Amino acid sequence: MSETTKTNITSKKVFSVLQLLLGLLLFMFSIDLLTVSMTQLNSRFAEELFLATNNPFVGLFVGLLMTALIQSSSTVTAMIVAVVASGSLSLSQAVPLVMGANIGTTITSTLIAFSYLMKKDEFQKALAAGVLHDIFNILAVLILFPLEVYFGFLSHMATFITATFFDLGGDFDGSYNYNVLFTRPFTLWLIELISIPFLSLILGVLLVFASIKFLSSYVLKTFMSPNFNKANKHIFQKPYIAFIYGIFFTAAVQSSTVTTSLMVPAVASRKVSLVRAFPFIIGANIGTTITAAIAAIYKTDAAISIALVHFLFNLCGALLFLPFPGIRKIPVKLATLLGRESNRTRFVGIAYILLTFFIIPFLLIYFNKNEDIREMSYKNDRVNKTEMQK
Image (cartoon, rainbow, N blue to C red; front, side):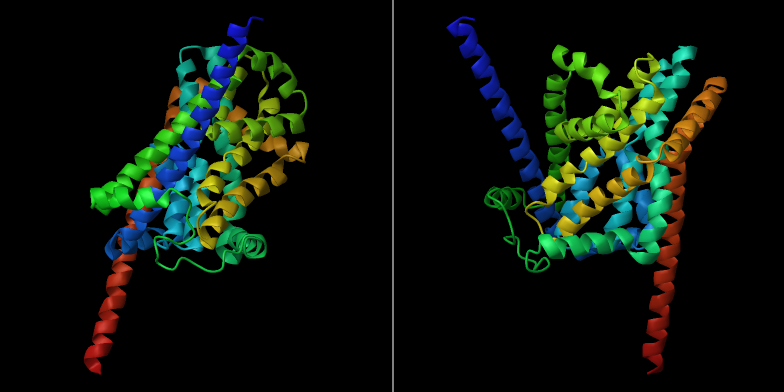
C-alpha cells in the first residue's frame, strides 16, 4: 500500500470521527435548547401539559401518538427528558409517555412491510416481521403499565437508583445555569436572539430530529459495509448473540426504527426466520435507550430518573421474554397470525395500523381531555360556591 493511499485512509478516518463528534455536539446542544425553551414558556402551556398527562392512560396514548407522527422514539424520549429537566413535567407523568413512545416507534417497520403488498408470498412474512416489534412492546406495556400506575414500579426503582448512584444534590431550582455543560452560554445567547420561547422550542425539536437522523445515517453506512454483511450469518445463530448485536447496533445508530426496519426485508426474503429475528428486536429496544441517557447526562435528578425508566422498561421487557423459549414464541405466533390474516384480507393490516397508532389514541385523548376540563370546571365551581358561602 502506497503512502498516498495510507494518508487518504487516515484522512477519511479523521473526517469520520469529526463527523461523529459534530453530530453528538449538535444533539447535546439541541437538547439544551429544548430544555431552556421549555423552562421559559409561560405557565399556561405547563398547565395544559399537566392536564394532558394527569391521567396516566391518556399519557400513554399521547406518547404513542406523538411518536407515531414523528416516527422517532429517540426524538420523543429526548424531548420528554428535556421537559422533565425543565421542571414542567413530573416523573410519574412522564413514565406513561415513555411507554407510549416505545409502542409508537414501531409503526415504521409495519409501514415498510406494505412495500411488499403486491408480492403475496413475501407480504405475509414482511408484515409479521413488521408487527413483531409492535406486539412485543404492547405486551410489555400490558404487563408493566398497571404495575407502574398502582405501585410506581418503574419510577420508584429509577428514583432509588438515581439517589444511590447519580444524586446531583436536588431538583431543578429554576436557574438556567443549573447543572449544565459547555453548550449553555451559546444556548442562552440564541434564545435571547430569537426572543420567542415557542420558536426556540420548535427549533430545538427540529435540531434533535436532525441530529438523530445525521447520526443514524452516518453509523448506518458503516454497518452496511460489505465486511459487516459477511458477518450477518453469524448474528442470528443464537438468541443471546442476536440480542447483544441488537443492543450494540441500535445504540450506535441511536434508532430502533432503523434496526427493526432492516429485519423486515431480511425476514421477507427468508434470510432470517421470524423466531431468530425476535431476540435482535428485543436487543434493539434496549439499545435505543442510549439517546435518553445522553440527553439526561447533564440534567437534573428527575431527568436521569426518566432516562433510567426508559432503560428499565425495556430491560424488564427483555427479562420477561428472552430467557424463556415458550414465552418468546407468544409474540412470534401473534405476529404470524396477523401476517396470515392480512395476507388473506389486506384491509386487516391497514385497519390494524389506523386503529392502533392513530384512531384509538386520538379518540381517547380527545374525549378524556374534555372529561378533564369538565372535572376541573366542576371543582372550580365548588370552590367558588364555598368561598361565596363564607
